[in-house]
Image 1: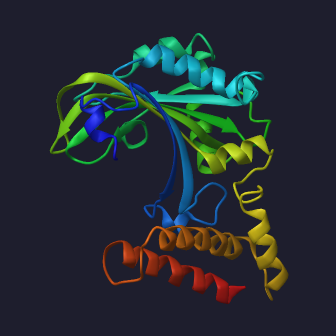
Image 2 (image 1 turned 135 degrees about the horizontal axis):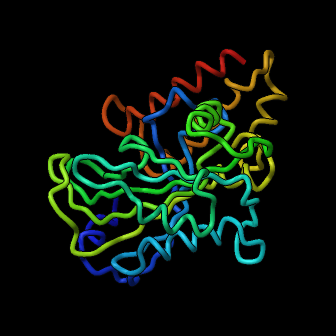
Length: 273
């Protein structure tokens, strides 16, 4: 969000290529916390092109980062899947991204998705654009998947989104695309927790060293330990500490209410333990 003026054409003091590690709180899928991949507090890793490189470079470097054993994470290419924007009444389907991806991954592992999954916007009046997302097989034995099978694997959390590239080239007003931006931008993102899970060979973000020390304390003091409530407590404690450290205080409105809701939910799960 702070980079929106620079996506719209304002010059950034750091230049046209940036990298970031951003601590985030997100409550849009609060009820999902406790499953294998969702967290209220997470760290978003990213790199940005502000009118510099675009799709070809972004996809090439994303693939290299994920799969190269020397320069990147060294992930198994046979466990990766890709989604691209299917298009709508305002913006055509992203066949350009598909053609670039075909240099690295079989076409039958590339899936078209609609605006719900592969369109990024920061609100009704903001820069916007299609995205391509990379998913990794957490089980190691899914192999080739049909479109329907991929959807089910995503629903079952057998695959996890590990990286995405957003191509912000459009101007959006009132929720409608009204034209192109003065420059073409790229925003890539990867959740540290999910990357850690993949790199540490677990099937969920909680069985990693980002959560295990706290979960161990909870387990040692619980009377009726269960994974779901322990995960909620551990995640919400991290969220609350981050918010309080950032100056948020409990209140009935705004961020203070978010903190209050997080602590109430943590206490409810704590009672179950």
